[in-house]
Image (cartoon, helix red, strand yellow):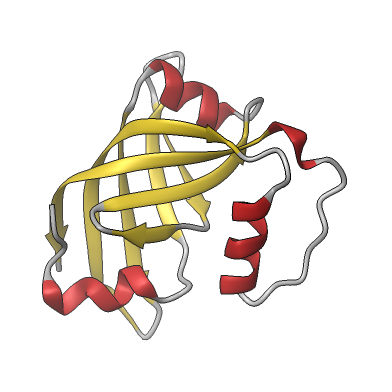
Length: 126
């Protein structure tokens, strides 16, 4: 699924995606997260023990929105589904995203890092 062409800029800039998941008690939760978008796939970095990862493994449907920081009523949203979890024990993807977001961070122990790959199923915009 391709995003609206007039909102592609929101997916290619280092902005925060607000990822919405369903928690274990069936209530919705939202988290701001770094992301990468390419060819219809949103990639996130996380650890195996975090609630976002556990929730997506149990309930793979999610949603996200990304706001334009200069025009907060301009945004893109997407319906997502987890398609893959890739081990990232050296934190390579984490460091790539940190660089994208202009940060120089060193992880103490990246061994439980994973890349969460979510397919975009539908987009919407305002």
